[in-house]
Image (cartoon, rainbow, N blue to C red; front, side, top):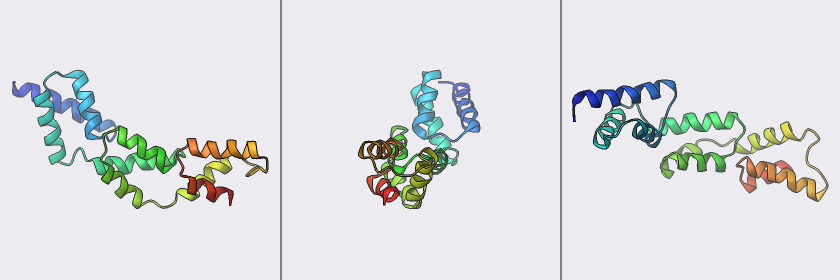
Length: 146
């Protein structure tokens, strides 16, 4: 396999990474869609990781902050990161450094339900489901209603 092939793959990876952070799995997947040479792709990934151009911990922090700004809870973000190939220990580490989930749940709830928690059981269940679907834990959801 020629060196030119390696540089084509490497340049494509840099192009993708110049737009936004990616996880190793995402970059690998995108490169496999464009190139056939698995060995060269693996070498490119190794070089990018060694040079700290791809960093799953950094990606996780960026992704977490981006999704939090859009009002999603830790459970949903955690699931999404797992599907992007991020190791559970990295996710746990980044989540451990974030403790404002209850505040975020309240903020999202108040944005959607201006009148606050309902006394009607059916409506209250619907309100709780909204937060559940946003990815908040039961503890975070209950903190909104207490």
